[in-house]
Amino acid sequence: MDAGILAVKPSYDKPDRARHLTNNNTFEVKGEKTILQVLPALGMSGGVECGTVEIAGCIHDAGWRSLVASAGGERVHQVARSGGEHFELPLDTKNPFTIWMNTARLVKLIREENVDLVHVRSRAPAWSAYRACKQTGVAFVTTFHGTYGAANAFKRAYNRVMTRGERVIAISSFIAGHLKQIYGVAADRIRVIFRGVDIETFDPAKVSAERVVQLSNAWRLEDGYPVVMLPGRLTRWKGQSIFIEAVASLGRKDIRCVLVGSDHGRSGYRKELVKQIERFDLSSVVRLVDNCEDMPAAYMLADVVISASTDPEAFGRIVTEAQALGRPIIAPDHGGARETIIDGVTGWLVPPGDQGALAKAIGHALDLGETDRAILAEKAIQNVRDHFSKDAMCKKTLDVYKEVLSEHEKR
Image (cartoon, rainbow, N blue to C red; front, side):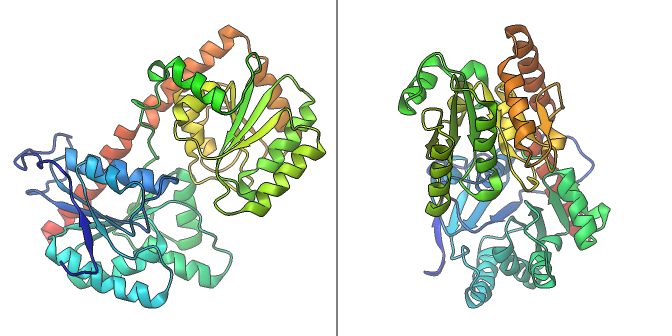
């Protein structure tokens, strides 16, 4: 291993590699396989990073070897804890020269570690990984995590590498439709795999009252006030401004509203939101807090959870996490939310960008009686457990790996 690749391996013994995969499917794959996931970095925020760690553990639990290559980050230790091995490469760059150099680095890694399949989740490292797979002949799978912006031919050409997987995983049917319409990807190469919620972590029975109280105190929330929460990084398209307008339109001072999320350096937008809160005389009602490290407790603290994105979410993790904990959820009627909310049953869909409709829905959710809230909670929790669990996501992803590897073994 040269100095350009740093490896972090599990701190405990690997499992017995004689174990066989237990799920039943029609794809025969002989022997232990080595899967390499490639992404820019392993920071704490973002569904790509979270999904990578979850799949790394799933690969390991299946008896295969699980590798991850990235520029590093806070989640590296989570990869090792899940049984995976991390290799540090400068994959968090869009510099053309570094992308070209990363191809050689990945070729070396693939050959030295006997990688059988590479799974990529982001465009810049995908260009390096795609070329490396072409040179080494290993299987290449991609996950399309968003629409990426396809307004012009240059952007579409740059994005197109994510459509070159032997299988292209779409994280929602909305994204699958985007792949077909914008890029002409054949339906037989697309596999829809919803992002999964860890229902062990997002289980209302496992979130202690102490955790909720601790968070409430940290956020300086007074007792006796219903809490309306909008989680999401502070960026304009997440709709925080629309949410503030809706709260102002609602005209209630007997609630507390919390915007949870870091500005990631967007201090200008944060200042705009603060001024908007002051302009509507909502300083006692609405507050901004940075990233929360205990989101299950945050959801349990909330009486209503909001997603207000102005652009369609590719999937919308907030929507499913809130339902997993039985929280009433309100989201825009577009993108992935249409697939994850049963409108009027597990939550409500409102016209995107319509602060009046959002205010009305918030008022309705706050006015739910105890019985109606309990019925909604039960149905929301069941919806996630039936359709959007982490276990289902992991199994379906492994099935894609086996499908592609089986084809390679027949060549």
